[in-house]
Amino acid sequence: MISNKALTLRSIVLFSAVTILILSCGKQVSSVSETSPWKKMDLIIKSIPQTSFLNKDYSITDFGAVADGKTMNTEAFVKAIKACAENGGGRVVVPNGKFLTGAIHLESNVNLHLEDNAEILFSINPKDYPIVHTSWEGTEVMNYSPLIYAKNKTNVAITGKGTLNGQANSSNWWVWSGGKSYGWQKGIPSQNDPSNREVLVDMAEKGVPVSERVFGEGRYLRPSFVEFFECNTVLIKDVTIINAPFWILHPLKSNNIIIDGVTVNSHGPNNDGCDPEYSQNIIIKNCTFNTGDDCIAIKAGRDADGRRVAIPSKNIIVQNCKMIDGHGGVVIGSEISAGVNNVFVEDCIMDSPNLDRVIRIKTNSKRGGVIEDVFVRNLEVGTVKECVLKLNMFYNVYGAQTGNFIPVIRNINLENINVKNGGKYSVWAEGYKESPVENITLKNVVIHKVDSIYKLKNVKNINFINTYINEKKVEPIKN
Image 1 (tube, rainbow, N blue to C red):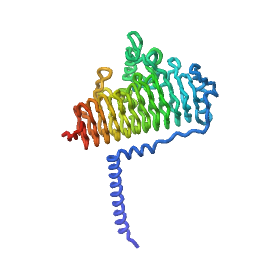
Image 2: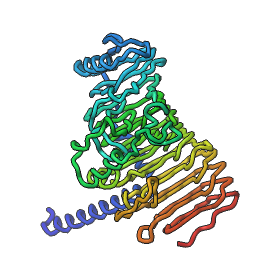
Image 3: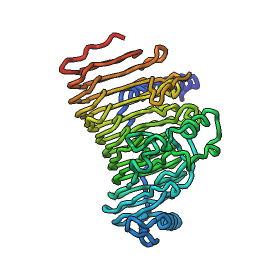
Image 4: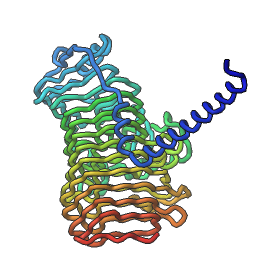
């Protein structure tokens, strides 16, 4: 028989062993998390649910749609989507041909599917886009509906190899930007008029409720193309998107989004290819971006509105994409006040004399935000105009943009990058004395034909590991 004293001693030994094991395992998990971010990416990918739809088709032509490119088919889309949703879901099919429509509002369990030679032409009449709760340049607003819109929906998709054509050009939506290169001339109203963009920003700064920020007619704030607002489990696959009025793919306050095989070819003002905002668990893969603004721009709200919402964008994965023209390949900001973290970019090709930067983070002391844990590997870059990596805490596109919200940028890692024509700078990083850009690592990076190795101001702990610029190995910088 074992004595109580022996049992007590054995219990103490067992408890101690278990405690040591738990602490040891905890250290191992922490170590994996810290040293193997790509394993974390794999876990994120595995956690994202897939869309699934009933095997039922609802052709829009069965609901009165006419493929002549002239007949307005808005009601046919409404009826087809409603019938599909009310019967448990399935595919709303757009057959081959050209179909003109106003805004399309999707429902849960609906897959809007375009056949290979189908083209949806979106009306250029603002009256065909009802006022909805949306967001404009990082500020929530009641404004024109996005061309394709879903709010508070689950299990929803846009698929097929057809084309979404916003029909935007310098004679309609683009002129509202106020840019002379997009058709604007003195005397033409635009978003830059005193009662428009800046009024919205001022409303947000003063805490005006979103329901009272009613814009639309007479305010000239262009709608996004495709917006999923507060949605979960979304797929956008294979479609081609052209001639967008404004931002193109805009997941907003949404989770579990897969964007796969999409081609974006649109060179209008603010034509960002994809703008995840306040969104999490996003995969963007096998896509081509040829844009008038950033190819991919990860957002998190503007100024006071971003701090009010306070939802960071995180777990954003970009894989096997091609970036052609654009202000940046993968960009974070400038609407970034709620912060961004856990961004993974791998196996992409970027190449154009009209591509300004490869990786860019842009913010300022009015935006603020904490941007951290950005991991980039296996990029092939042909030509880039300005720089390979730009980290800027003093972004001022609309004039003075200063405030009391000093941003944080840290933990930026580039590995296995090859650049043929590097532009002006390999790395351009500028921080504040009280908040330096911190922990930049370039490992196994080769950059050819660049004017300057780097331009640095208030940067702490930048590491060059086996990195060659203009055929010379970069020596470590003493911090």
